[in-house]
Image (cartoon, rainbow, N blue to C red):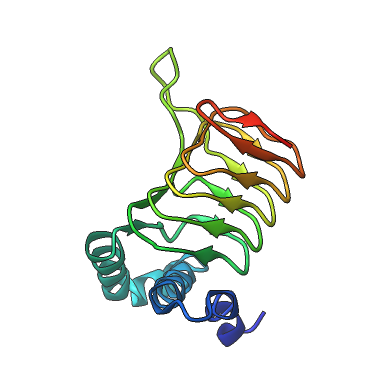
Length: 165
């Protein structure tokens, strides 16, 4: 994938959503620093700007080391918190007030982070925590708390999330 294609891989899916286009372009630009240490050094001022602008001003915590597939869509990007250990597949949808990350285990250590498949649609105010897998083509209803793995082609909702269809 060429540089321009890499930087713009989320733009078409976010048509009409200027905030998401800006955030995702900046995110992909920040990810260039993951490729090689010399690039990270060249981008250090930009990485600081990315951190302050996207996290502090726009309220979207999307660390540059997070692995995100092509075609990510962000609707109403506010209070969005994604741990850098999360892996998100292609063509996924994230909505406002969503948290995806690890959890504290009973023994005091942190769990791993979720792995989210392709074409996953995540509703507003969703919490996905722990070392779990979310399958492909999954829909997660608004307000769901997902703490267990979800198989492919399911719709889940509730607290804790349960399979509806």
